[in-house]
Length: 235
Image (tube, rainbow, N blue to C red):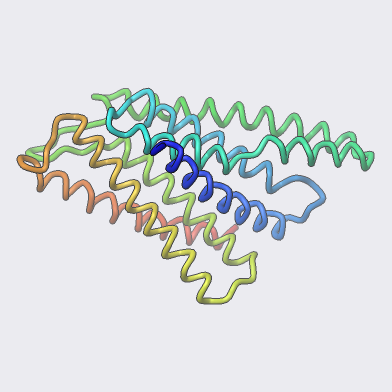
């Protein structure tokens, strides 16, 4: 039952994010080609490959529900094969055979390439000392920190594009930014703590190190989100 609840919550967040991202892309680039669906599927495929390496192949025994919420719930709802199929059919129905063929080739090839690149990046990050380095009395899970930073950068870019391309009241814009940032910082920090616990660290003997990782992750993600916001303004 717990897994069903977290998958449902992750799926709700993924579906909303997909709607916002695809709507923003369509308002930006137009609807003469399925740009919005293509973008969410390629991004989702890359994240699926990257996070499969980080969340499943390098397993954390107490994080089953957490992994299910992200991979099955959020990314499963963020990507969409059915919309891709429907939009391709509409292109064929309109006589745009070349655009339909291009959509199939780019979507399938792009998503396969994105998954492969995600898995490759994940393997590379965890290839050295299992993704963790020891420095003095501190522990640095650098692999997960880099993955979190990448996610924060994407959030910054997506948020900027959405806020620029979709007309929303200032209050709703502020709410979107606060909810996205707060949720991401909390969940990414939580997974780091779970990772450290699975590696044998405890609050009793390693409290300072665990708090340092949590705070460091938050500061790093905030800085990278800011870089994503700057990058998004240039797009």
